[in-house]
Length: 164
Image (tube, rainbow, N blue to C red):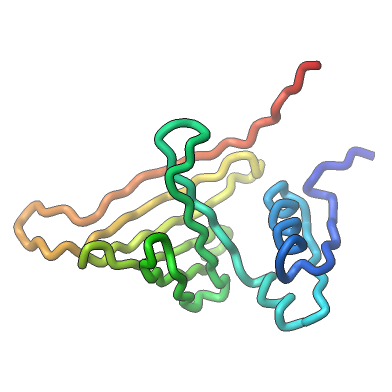
């Protein structure tokens, strides 16, 4: 019998916080089906309906300048979290079929900055596309003033080969 990570089911106890939650997150990120077990049913359910996304920025490889982790509620409701430098961030997420859509809003130097990311996975589950939209409400009204930028990131899963 051939077993792939997509057929492995992991049961993680204490998965509603701390080490258990992180283990569940990492196993899920590897494509495994994760069952969460918790003594407190409400906290276990909350852990299963939230998604945390960490963003790291750096100028050189392995030199992290800043890191930000946002927690999204997957039911579409808004969550207010404190981001870097004490900035309040409104975050929400919802599913549109197989696509996960996340939205954030924050104020930077008096301007409202909104980001929308659409995460989609191809049928082989080896390529993830993230469509990014950034909108800045800067107040400029002149013709041709652009307040929206768009970009696309594509992540391809690869197997690392270790030579001994």
